[in-house]
Image (cartoon, rainbow, N blue to C red):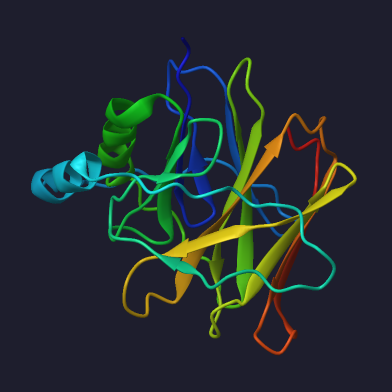
Length: 218
């Protein structure tokens, strides 16, 4: 079985060498990939082990919205906590780096390795009031769409339109007031996209941030 990992730090996405699949992140009109490797701090063995041995709560990926109904509140997760986001993939947020998160398709061990690698990825911080966009796929499976948001007001909902469909994204963030979080959508077998629009809305419905991306995207 092939394994695919997605490692993001800000707008940076790193496709790890020797692994199949796709990992690519875009912000705004500039379609940038790559990242900056930094020196990792001491390995968070205890925290990561505790997160991986805990029960992973079921969390449905982003589902299509019903009209203008707002999504549920942003889910608060612990650092390195594996969050199921669809198709067997696990999402994890890191306190190191800037808007740093991983998506791993190969189970707990692959997730652990992805977290360790991501701790050495620095990247560039998202500018305030903006969203990044990334996609991740694995042979024989569908597409996962993820990205980071950095907004002064925590979004009440985030929607993503691509391939002629619109989804209500799931949202997660770290405890406290980190000022950023990650959205995720299980796009299933949605065909190749050439354009995507991600929009974050405040509690009163105002647009906090929007990202229009052109492709090909995946």
